[in-house]
Image (cartoon, rainbow, N blue to C red):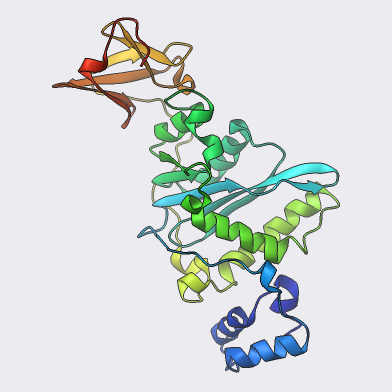
Length: 302
């Protein structure tokens, strides 16, 4: 037992106990397994343990929410590599773990586009604050967010300096650091990528997860019923909608006022909906701005 999953992945007595039970064995009590590990000097030090979540929130079904974040960077063959993780909130299923050499929108979009083609679309994608609109414009959408909306995915962001917003992917990164990083090969990018690929099915299908009743994530996950189109669609609007073209700085003109909707929408078309004293700006099916009519002033940027 001590020469198996414990030696390879650093698993503790609880996970070994759950794994043995799932394999049809009658394992000794967890405390006995812990004593065996201690006798063989196989106990992970407390500093390497992953802190427990203070409070857990969980979506009701797979693919309602995916969490996306970068881990790193790490040095691999004298190059900085930043693995990109995508995790399903409900099942903790690890959808993607890809080594990236930059953290640009283009790189992330390429990974997600392939992933959407493999397993379908989520309802919401939660990203770290580095991908928030505030970093790219005063208000409004980025091109990354606009692409998600056109696919029918709601973009969401973690609060800056509050990693607990993405608690599951942050805890996953703790697992990654404790179980894989001490063993992963870093001599070549190919070896590094291969070890990531080898570990992902272990995490999804073998490793017991305490929050899932010591079952692996695969027991609670299934592909999305929402299939990815063959090519990125365009935003569409109903007949008779009031439309405005977004300028190069990310603004639209309405009633002589300039309303910011984000540089990521430059050249795109948005819909203006005015009801009573409220003005809404929609991109596709999603509302992106809401103002009162009293805020509109000639040549004022809002």
